Image (spheres, rainbow, N blue to C red):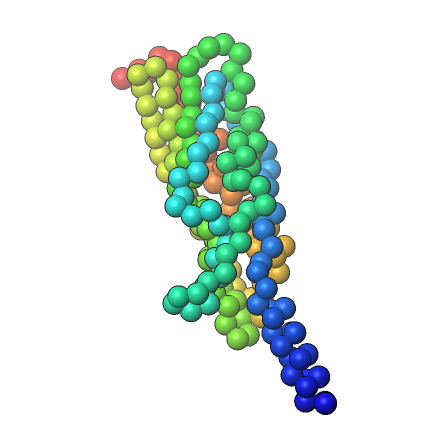
Length: 181
Protein backbone atom coordinates (compact mmCIF):
# COMPACT_ATOMS: atom_id res chain seq x y z
CA UNK A 1 0.00 0.00 0.00
CA UNK A 2 2.77 2.41 0.94
CA UNK A 3 4.57 1.70 -2.35
CA UNK A 4 1.42 2.39 -4.34
CA UNK A 5 0.89 5.75 -2.63
CA UNK A 6 4.55 6.64 -3.07
CA UNK A 7 4.49 5.68 -6.76
CA UNK A 8 1.25 7.65 -7.34
CA UNK A 9 2.72 10.70 -5.60
CA UNK A 10 5.90 10.47 -7.67
CA UNK A 11 3.91 10.23 -10.91
CA UNK A 12 1.79 13.22 -9.86
CA UNK A 13 4.89 15.32 -9.15
CA UNK A 14 6.53 14.18 -12.38
CA UNK A 15 3.46 15.02 -14.46
CA UNK A 16 3.20 18.47 -12.84
CA UNK A 17 6.81 19.21 -13.79
CA UNK A 18 6.11 18.34 -17.40
CA UNK A 19 2.92 20.33 -17.93
CA UNK A 20 2.62 22.65 -20.88
CA UNK A 21 3.84 26.17 -20.13
CA UNK A 22 1.21 28.88 -19.91
CA UNK A 23 1.08 31.53 -22.65
CA UNK A 24 3.61 34.27 -21.92
CA UNK A 25 2.35 37.70 -20.91
CA UNK A 26 4.35 40.02 -23.10
CA UNK A 27 4.01 43.77 -23.08
CA UNK A 28 6.14 46.64 -24.17
CA UNK A 29 6.46 50.10 -22.76
CA UNK A 30 5.44 52.89 -25.06
CA UNK A 31 8.64 54.12 -26.68
CA UNK A 32 10.02 57.57 -26.02
CA UNK A 33 10.15 59.38 -29.34
CA UNK A 34 13.07 61.83 -29.28
CA UNK A 35 12.60 62.85 -32.92
CA UNK A 36 10.06 65.40 -34.09
CA UNK A 37 9.10 63.95 -37.49
CA UNK A 38 6.02 61.74 -37.19
CA UNK A 39 4.93 59.01 -39.56
CA UNK A 40 1.57 58.80 -41.30
CA UNK A 41 1.08 55.07 -41.48
CA UNK A 42 2.42 52.10 -39.52
CA UNK A 43 1.90 48.51 -40.59
CA UNK A 44 3.18 45.55 -38.54
CA UNK A 45 3.43 42.01 -39.92
CA UNK A 46 4.68 38.78 -38.38
CA UNK A 47 6.81 36.87 -40.89
CA UNK A 48 7.94 34.12 -38.56
CA UNK A 49 7.30 30.57 -39.74
CA UNK A 50 6.22 29.61 -36.22
CA UNK A 51 3.57 30.98 -33.88
CA UNK A 52 5.17 30.24 -30.52
CA UNK A 53 7.44 32.52 -28.51
CA UNK A 54 8.94 30.09 -26.00
CA UNK A 55 10.64 26.82 -26.97
CA UNK A 56 11.92 24.38 -24.37
CA UNK A 57 14.05 21.75 -26.06
CA UNK A 58 13.77 18.36 -24.38
CA UNK A 59 15.85 16.26 -26.77
CA UNK A 60 16.47 16.18 -30.51
CA UNK A 61 12.90 15.31 -31.45
CA UNK A 62 10.83 16.76 -28.61
CA UNK A 63 10.12 20.22 -27.30
CA UNK A 64 7.48 22.19 -25.42
CA UNK A 65 6.14 25.40 -26.90
CA UNK A 66 4.27 28.40 -25.50
CA UNK A 67 2.78 31.30 -27.45
CA UNK A 68 2.46 34.89 -26.35
CA UNK A 69 -0.87 35.67 -24.72
CA UNK A 70 -1.45 38.55 -27.21
CA UNK A 71 -0.16 38.77 -30.79
CA UNK A 72 3.26 40.41 -31.00
CA UNK A 73 2.02 42.55 -33.88
CA UNK A 74 -0.47 44.26 -31.54
CA UNK A 75 2.15 44.75 -28.82
CA UNK A 76 4.65 46.32 -31.24
CA UNK A 77 2.01 48.54 -32.86
CA UNK A 78 0.92 49.86 -29.45
CA UNK A 79 4.51 50.50 -28.37
CA UNK A 80 5.28 52.49 -31.53
CA UNK A 81 2.18 54.72 -31.31
CA UNK A 82 4.18 57.82 -30.22
CA UNK A 83 5.96 57.91 -33.60
CA UNK A 84 2.68 58.03 -35.52
CA UNK A 85 0.21 60.84 -35.88
CA UNK A 86 1.48 63.21 -38.54
CA UNK A 87 -1.29 65.76 -39.03
CA UNK A 88 -0.13 66.68 -42.51
CA UNK A 89 0.05 64.16 -45.30
CA UNK A 90 3.83 63.86 -45.40
CA UNK A 91 3.67 60.40 -46.98
CA UNK A 92 6.06 58.73 -44.52
CA UNK A 93 5.08 55.10 -43.90
CA UNK A 94 6.74 52.31 -41.97
CA UNK A 95 6.34 48.64 -42.72
CA UNK A 96 7.54 46.72 -39.66
CA UNK A 97 8.08 42.96 -39.95
CA UNK A 98 8.89 40.58 -37.13
CA UNK A 99 11.59 38.32 -38.52
CA UNK A 100 12.46 36.53 -35.28
CA UNK A 101 11.09 36.56 -31.75
CA UNK A 102 12.07 33.54 -29.72
CA UNK A 103 13.04 32.39 -26.26
CA UNK A 104 15.07 29.18 -26.40
CA UNK A 105 15.24 27.34 -23.09
CA UNK A 106 17.57 24.52 -22.17
CA UNK A 107 16.91 22.93 -18.80
CA UNK A 108 19.59 20.82 -17.17
CA UNK A 109 19.30 18.86 -13.94
CA UNK A 110 20.16 21.76 -11.63
CA UNK A 111 20.32 24.80 -13.91
CA UNK A 112 18.69 26.46 -16.90
CA UNK A 113 19.90 28.54 -19.83
CA UNK A 114 17.73 31.00 -21.74
CA UNK A 115 18.49 32.73 -25.01
CA UNK A 116 16.12 35.56 -25.93
CA UNK A 117 16.35 36.94 -29.46
CA UNK A 118 14.42 39.54 -31.42
CA UNK A 119 14.95 40.65 -35.03
CA UNK A 120 12.69 43.27 -36.58
CA UNK A 121 12.96 44.75 -40.07
CA UNK A 122 11.65 48.24 -40.73
CA UNK A 123 11.17 49.72 -44.18
CA UNK A 124 10.49 53.44 -44.30
CA UNK A 125 8.97 54.88 -47.48
CA UNK A 126 8.35 58.47 -48.55
CA UNK A 127 7.46 59.00 -52.18
CA UNK A 128 9.99 57.12 -54.27
CA UNK A 129 12.63 56.94 -51.51
CA UNK A 130 13.08 53.92 -49.27
CA UNK A 131 15.25 53.04 -46.34
CA UNK A 132 15.23 49.68 -44.58
CA UNK A 133 17.24 48.19 -41.77
CA UNK A 134 17.24 45.23 -39.41
CA UNK A 135 17.14 45.87 -35.69
CA UNK A 136 18.00 42.98 -33.42
CA UNK A 137 19.04 42.05 -29.95
CA UNK A 138 19.84 38.97 -27.90
CA UNK A 139 19.94 38.33 -24.20
CA UNK A 140 21.31 35.24 -22.48
CA UNK A 141 20.66 34.25 -18.90
CA UNK A 142 21.09 31.24 -16.67
CA UNK A 143 20.17 30.22 -13.18
CA UNK A 144 19.43 27.38 -10.85
CA UNK A 145 16.73 24.75 -11.25
CA UNK A 146 13.86 26.02 -13.44
CA UNK A 147 13.21 29.62 -14.57
CA UNK A 148 10.13 31.35 -13.25
CA UNK A 149 7.70 32.40 -15.95
CA UNK A 150 7.77 35.97 -14.64
CA UNK A 151 11.56 36.03 -15.12
CA UNK A 152 11.26 34.81 -18.70
CA UNK A 153 8.59 37.42 -19.47
CA UNK A 154 10.51 40.28 -17.81
CA UNK A 155 13.74 39.51 -19.68
CA UNK A 156 11.97 39.28 -23.03
CA UNK A 157 10.02 42.50 -22.37
CA UNK A 158 13.29 44.34 -21.61
CA UNK A 159 14.86 43.07 -24.82
CA UNK A 160 11.81 43.98 -26.92
CA UNK A 161 11.70 47.47 -25.35
CA UNK A 162 15.36 47.99 -26.19
CA UNK A 163 14.90 47.04 -29.86
CA UNK A 164 11.74 49.13 -30.25
CA UNK A 165 13.41 52.18 -28.67
CA UNK A 166 16.28 51.82 -31.14
CA UNK A 167 13.77 51.74 -34.01
CA UNK A 168 11.80 54.75 -32.76
CA UNK A 169 14.92 56.88 -32.41
CA UNK A 170 16.71 56.05 -35.65
CA UNK A 171 16.77 59.32 -37.63
CA UNK A 172 17.38 57.45 -40.91
CA UNK A 173 13.85 55.99 -40.68
CA UNK A 174 12.41 59.53 -40.75
CA UNK A 175 13.27 60.14 -44.38
CA UNK A 176 13.21 63.90 -44.78
CA UNK A 177 11.16 65.41 -47.57
CA UNK A 178 14.13 67.19 -49.09
CA UNK A 179 17.35 65.21 -48.97
CA UNK A 180 20.59 67.01 -49.78
CA UNK A 181 22.89 64.84 -51.86
